[in-house]
Image (cartoon, rainbow, N blue to C red; front, side, top):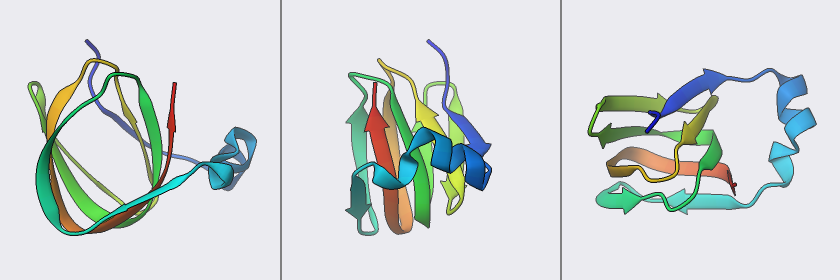
Length: 89
């Protein structure tokens, strides 16, 4: 299984992918386990998050484009309330 991928996108990439039309998800400071039954792409609008996976710890926040692979089991720790656009494959 591939791991979490964190990248930065240009404004053109954001427009080309239609990210601003994706649904928005928000969550308060919290911790919870999560399993991805499909690949998720998300663009973080605000927040500070640490996701722990079997292959390591990933920290991301505003401006990051994050891909979570299908089949990933992980633990989310939201340090600052998160707001993100998301899309599932």
